Length: 372
Image 1 (cartoon, rainbow, N blue to C red):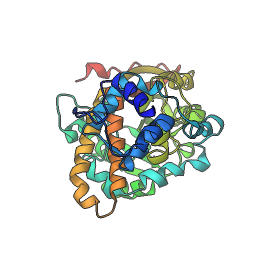
Image 2: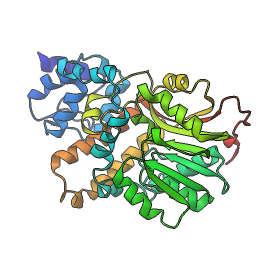
Image 3: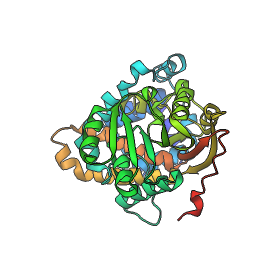
Image 4: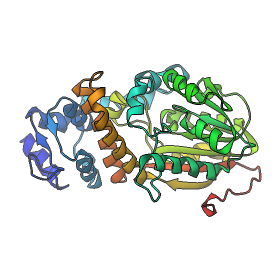
């Protein structure tokens, strides 16, 4: 009965159980049907990690399910729903809890991340503008950000959530600007300091709420997803007070089509603990009376390509990564990369570059779209 119900739901997206298409699900354990019915996303991801099912093109399967809105057809069980409650009640991204994401994800292993990232170590959406090469697409992303910020050698740039230091290094080397970079991941900071040695880049191991100083420009790439809706206004206040009156701020973040105060339970449990994707409404509300939103650029389709490129590199590196990680970890990581690619392909989630200037300061509108 349960198996038939799941088969009928999947059929609406053109996905079959044990079918012949590359996006069909090959079930190896019959317990899978009940687990998915009652645990939804969490059960789907965990059962893949456990080897209960396979799919030749997992990204395409996820795309088809999301494109047809099938995540709304199966109601979650109690275990699934319980994962949403903490985000509704508590500030999961408070200063005291801010290091959890660094310890459980970003401090995991520099060798792991650098095995699939580009030469500039960008763990964020690339910009595949007239190229299919990941390294070039990430350089194009960095140059796009520089144009939007109108970076010059006279600028002092604040890099909030600097990752492995690739953006800071690139901007200091190519554009000659001074950079102050902040991060709470010790592993990332250790690597960033090495690759930026001799450049006008200073690193600070601190939470964004502890930023001190005044800067010409500010950028935050792939960090706002860890701020949390209860702290969006605080984040905007910090950036606003850190910028000169004629300063420019670029926020690069994955975003949701709807306002939420929680995250996908599987992603939260295994990849990004306490993560939260903002909506444009939430961002605009918390920027009100602080910033003028000058431009919103949706790069969502480019993240699909980025994730697929990361997965190809991850699979190629697995021969030596397998010395450190087991097969369950491999399945977890490929499920993460491929399911996210499918979600971006279905336009279920987005990635935005939002350009802002300080409200009421009379700064001319940045005109990067005219600069090619």
